[in-house]
Length: 262
Image (cartoon, rainbow, N blue to C red):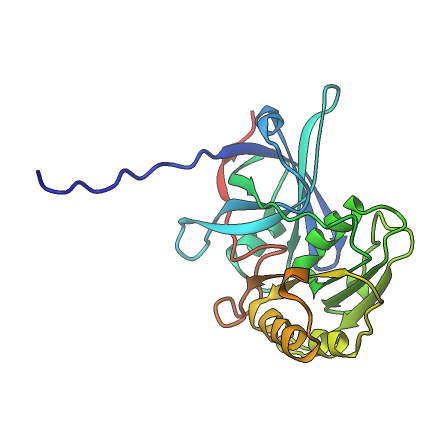
């Protein structure tokens, strides 16, 4: 018998309804999804969803990865899931988020991802650009209030600063680009290079523009002698592939609008 092509298994997806659209900062929008389908998820803030959104140029749906900013499921209020979208650039996900209205239906796959901050580490460092901010906020909320935490976030300007939840006294450094395009500065590189780590066994979480986090990873391993086991690095987007910037807390993204809730 001739060899048969492998069977391609379709990954189960979830369809939910847009319940609310809120402007968190001038360049970040939070979209809340709701629906009975969400109650079946085992979602944890900080995990990743692959969302399908329409591409205005091709008319076809494209997929993008985004971070679960928050997920709650109660017997009285039902299930809801929050996703934060960075609005710089004119990619399909940012364009969809700008126009999203309550009642729209959205399809996504996931969530996935197993990272959790180690509550027993002596100290934590979280670093990234605005696309990493939803994950950073989610992870901070998981840590005990007494945790020693330093946060470094590159953002457009002071208008993009946000409250940091959970930890009682995190050290937060906001790095303002002040007119420079995302993915073009060394603000994060320089801040990490100048940082002084506390004594003890720590952990560093780093995400955002892929070339930037690769440079910083090399810096931490080669210049600072950080143990690989103490370092978690994830590239979320690449300026060369998505020139104006892309996902908020994920890789190139997509959301398929499949109608409106009735």
